[in-house]
Length: 391
Ligand code: SAH
Image (tube, rainbow, N blue to C red; front, side, top):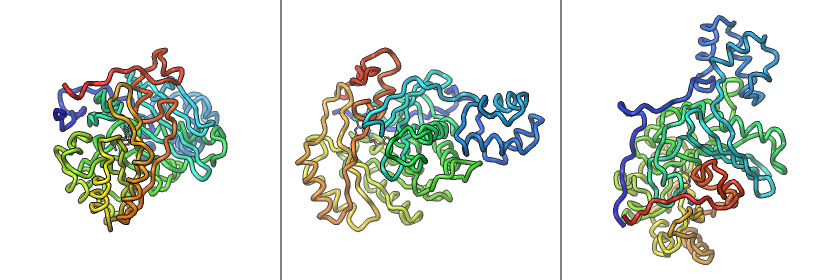
């Protein structure tokens, strides 16, 4: 296996001109919205009114904001409620408890989000970038590379839209109120740092400024961009950090998570423990179980030694093979042995459920399939080309 590109392209770097979307009210805090509304010649209280519709009632369509005089509504909608996400496809599975949405953004980029209902909570998994520059070879999003960062509002609007779907009672057997948000859709959230932090602030601010979610119920998943983890620890936020480790040794992690060539296992774990100490939040260690690649008993023992006594919880994710991939998920007996060894080391461990697989629900597969009338549209595996890592 040859080594992969290490450091991602920065889409915001001078010389590149990403087509960012128009400003939206979710990009601004309430004082910012007030200032803009006043600039438009409207009374300042309209900022609160329109925010209440969007974050409080989960109404995204200005036409439904009928308590606003028509002229004001048009002015405010034009400046604060541009359409950011156009649904391309929505799919449901697991008896309606999992719903996947594929969106087209204003520049034609495709991103996806997933709504997952459980008896006690409703979670949405959202995207932070169109594509991803981290090049993890087992991840569908990583195969296509990075198109651009999402704006804060493009990130928030995914959650607001799906919170509205949940509120309509569409997820049978679950509470109607969105409670959890995970940044585990497309993209590397910490590579789009400031917009992701802005989006988190909107998600946790009480309505009508934001969605009023609990910080503890927000999870940011990262490949392990060490400086950004440290910076996140210094924000006045205590969201849950998930670290995509996938291997306990540098030799294998250099391959599975190429950014490891820059920040090694020891260094990224150090940053994770500091994050846990600063925020008081246990770190979630993500580990995709890949048959005969990272699932050996000795790796379970090594992982156990690295994590024992730390404020960590391991989430094993059965690999969801990407189309054309030469890798497969570990067998159940191997997975059970891995769990047993970790627990024996005193490390709390669970295996993630595999929601949405039959609708390409995991890890960028729907967007990779595009919106053509492909097999993916009928729920089968998309036929995308996967870059050959051997060359
Ligand atoms: N860029 C962030 C978010 C990515 S998606 C990160 O890497 O953490 C969330 C999780 O799904 C990550 O742990 C990622 O490594 C994992 N993942 C990606 N593709 C997968 C696949 N095909 N099967 C199982 N897990 C996968």
